[in-house]
Length: 43
Image 1 (cartoon, rainbow, N blue to C red):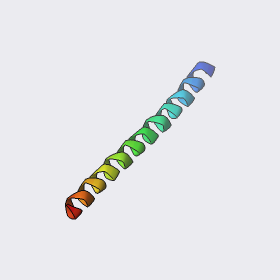
Image 2: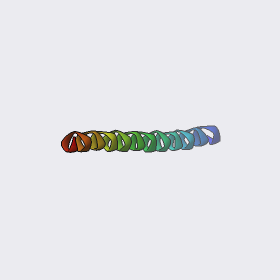
Image 3: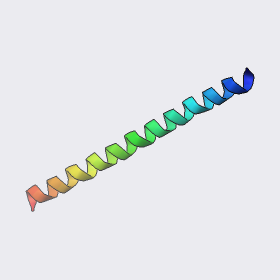
Image 4: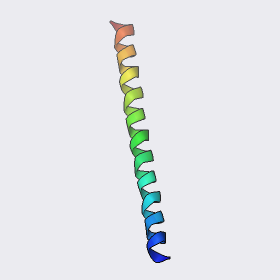
C-alpha cells in the first residue's frame, strides 16, 4: 500500500511540473508572436 501511495504522489508532482512547463512554453510562444506582429506593424 505504501509504495503505491508514494508512486501516485510522484505522478501528481510530475503532472504539476509538466503543466507548468507547458504554461511557460505557451507564454513564451505568445510573447514572441506578439513581438513579431508588433515589429511588423511598426516596420
